[in-house]
Amino acid sequence: MRDSTTAAPLDYSFDGVAWQRVYGRPAAFAGITPDFVASLGLGLLDLQFTQLDPRHYSAAEHQAVIPVAPASYGGIIAPLVAPITTVASGVPRAGSIDNAGDLPSPARVVFKGPCRNPVLTTDAGYKIGYVGSIAYDQTVTLSAWDSTVIKSPPRASVAGDLDRRTRLSRLVVPAGHSEWYFEATDQTGTATATVYWRDSFTAMQH
Image (cartoon, rainbow, N blue to C red):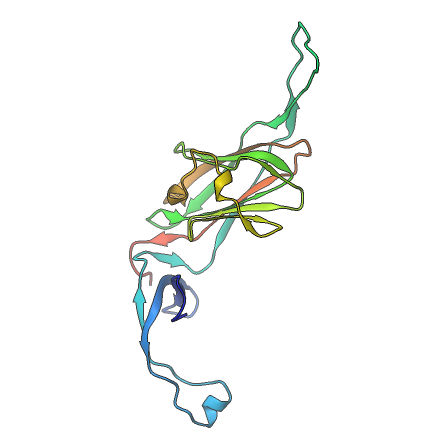
């Protein structure tokens, strides 16, 4: 953790039941006393932890799965022009998300195929879109935590395939209740969009 380039999580609790989390990095610590207990892998450690993200989060990560709506086919309008094609596309389907904190929380979105051009829209009007096809055994993960867009398998960055309206810095779950809408071209009706987040608070929770 001390050598990591990203912030590390530190979970804390006042009663051993409810747990919260902050992100930062160890600034200084004294080594464990090299006694017999230490040889068993146990010991006390005095640690100074610098909090880099001012928010406090729930230790548990929440998720909401939003399925794609069943596909519908457009009608055929005369005059007919060859070749004749139809496109299966689902109308937006809503999913409810509740952030029990008092601050917006960075989110992670996972699009699971098979689908093409998936788009997730919040009730505030923010659109999260991927341009391209996702196979039935593939996912595309967009993360505001580390500003990455990963397609798996193979595990590869596909940030260049984001819809031009998508800004990862704005990928957050607002405090309170919000509605999110998922749409994609999917003939099977099995594609999903999953939103992951942690409740986010201004101050330490007791």
